[in-house]
Length: 487
Image (cartoon, rainbow, N blue to C red; front, side, top):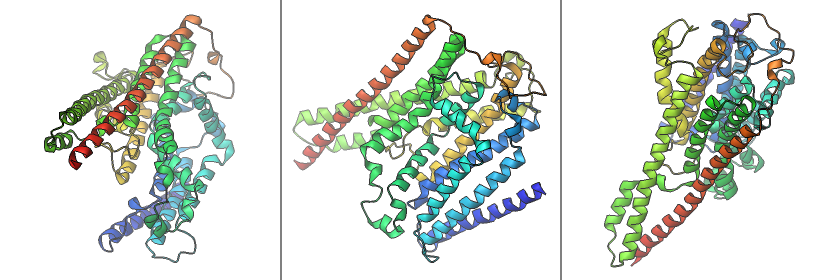
């Protein structure tokens, strides 16, 4: 009966999804209406969809781990009495999916004037926000361990990370786009913009003014992009403090430091955003007797080319390094003696591993693109309606990553989170383990951690300062070009 109940509700979700898709396509091409992707509250639905998609992916992960006998309950140190089965997770997720599509359909039809507007159209995304909060908190007995883990992750490096805390930290790095939309949703709700009509949103210039504020655009959004990477970086340093092992902890920290540099350039540096060809064309059209103006413009163009090359090199290096870490360190694959895979594989077909390795190479580059803040003006920035797809693809990549990450931890105990390498079939996690005790490793390690952290902070500060200086130079060049055109 449980599976039958899940099946017919999945059918209802499919019908609602097709209904929403049909109305959006038909409304845009036949009536000239704006699709759901162009509506003002679309980031609210996109953010809630990100959380909903991860709920489905978590159920998929639990199913795969259970199916192939990967003891995730023992590895994560879960209480077996509080662990849901895959069917229970899917049942909860399908209920949330029904509410999500109903709210989206009602919001679209209310904005298109296809139904009486007894309440403002923004009330439907507001209801979805409240329902999402309810689903994240209740039942509290089941959700409490998750929130406790999130609290401990946010306290990094003050808390010694367990394997599950590092897993949560890795998931956070894949949810940057989701966190950006959740921040937008919070501002949308608290500002009262959800109370306005759709026509007011389209005509008024005072709507969403907070998106152009310095606090939101230049502080909050870059911090949202950096925070997951910073937390994971701190977890690596804390592991080094607890174990005294430079490798792999400092090498892993370096991976997140590189990603932070990519984010900082994407958030603050204007030079890589420019189209070189357009700049060269503009320079060729400038005909002015003032040689200083022309020299300033050409110097800015060369400066722009330099930083474009630097940023692209950093982008490629960070993506390839993350890909190598996924395959060789997190999954334990790429061993020549094992046919470029690993020993004692738990999944039935070797082709699965090669397909996932190939997919991860491509999807790692897409993940780095998600670190670029929205509305940055980058020429490779994805439009709003495609960002939902890239967000979902990255969550799917993280799900596939978790299959093989836990398989490797089950086989090898790679980072020493457990005292023994054998994973038992029968276990009880309702007690404190001795291997969770922390041992002081001395001042030498602590000083080394302080030095590494200081270097990363210094590089980050240098990137921001260089960005502000470059912005000033670009403004001077644009003013010179405007002056030349005027003359």
